Length: 253
Image 1: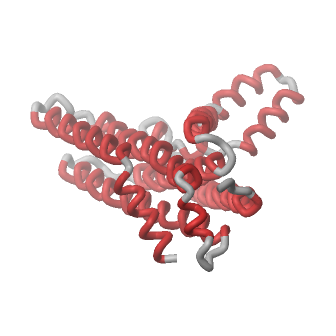
Image 2 (image 1 turned 120 degrees about the horizontal axis):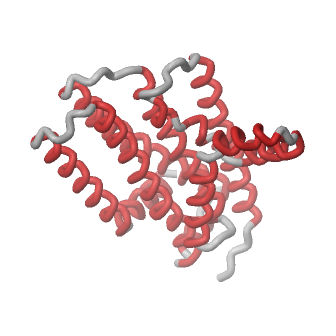
Image 3 (image 1 turned 45 degrees about the vertical axis):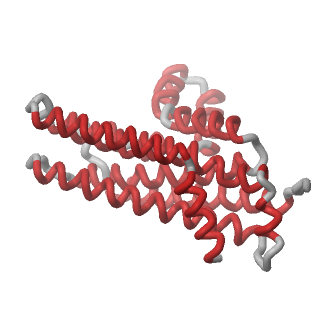
């Protein structure tokens, strides 16, 4: 198990996309600091929105472009045969890969969140519970995308996996708007069909609390508990199907 963890860590560190994302992340950090120094950026809403969007966007790209290659390269470079020739089961290989990458995502989000909350404290901006929940929800989003990318990579090519995951990500944010439009048609058949599709897609529309921090705050605690539970269940189901497909997959020498 330790070998899987170390191998995954080495692959992450060697990936060129990681350094590109970190480079642009640092550029954006310097850009935001420059704006604050020039006193052009004093709006608390802008600061919060910028940092939350930056946390989600940059590490979404990291998950898509780095994680999508991990399993693909194992198969493409035939290193999968060396790994599976050892006394390790296929489901253990998948689960430990996902767990290790999940821990990496958690540490990155934790580090950025500390920086973000430090900026809010320094700028004397109120840190309300929706900001904290938005960070937690971003983590859930990244975890679900992680599971989806791994699932797609188990039977699709690298670029198709990335493109499909992108479409799922953006489509899943739109269901609230789509349902509002569908309800106006008063067509029960279409309404139930959209609700069925909504069950198949991840609950990103419900996890997108960062977009309503400033115009809606009356969220019951049950809302966050339910969506957290739903996210964990969705992540688990996708991981289960990934394990199922990978366990039955035939690899060519």
